[in-house]
Image (tube, rainbow, N blue to C red; front, side):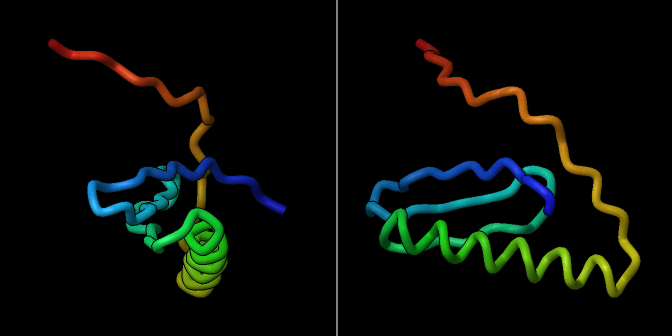
Amino acid sequence: MKRFPVLVEQDEDGVFIAHVPSLPGCHTQAKSLAEVEKRIHVAIRLYLEVARKRRTPIQPNRFIGAHLVDVA
């Protein structure tokens, strides 16, 4: 089992957007947090399946943390 950090944001329309920094292009969106969590799980599995078939190495980033930065 592999573990990947997933970043989730909510846009101005209330849509949840999830992306996986370690897997370029691996992202999804949904109207609820529960649904976006299900969808990103599927997206990661599909990404890994394609990478395996193409023999693309996956090197997960080391998750450090998420930060909010205030800029005036």
